[in-house]
Length: 206
Image: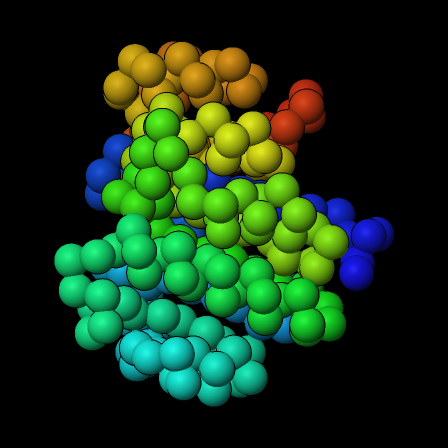
């Protein structure tokens, strides 16, 4: 176990087309992890990186050994994204428990796979006990209020692009963001906050 590991669980949020996926991709590429587990159910990361994702359990095992484990569930789980996500989350957690160093679990458009009323036990294991095995998270959702509160409660950092939905802004304001500042962001601009920190970071991806 890696009990001294300082857990990082990032949520990237914002309206569609504002730069979330670009930020997510860059963060994954530069993340200091020995092994990266990416659930690519939209196929966007494969297209951006021009790589072919693993599609079978055997392919996942080979990919994990290489350090880049991108999973596309479309072949074995067509139309069953939630079931595929549960399988992959369990795979990432079990493999991470046997690997040294820092690992990363990443998923884009998480709101398509979980809701506000249910959360897979496999994802709860990653969020609540992944720290013991050096497993960090980088997740994306258009609106944080669309996610289960057990996900939101575990976040250590939130990065927001422009927001207009009142419930999303309300939750982000509770995290420390300025409401008017979120509405005023231009496409490509973002603001980030760590839980409990007084300062915020700002930047742009395009």
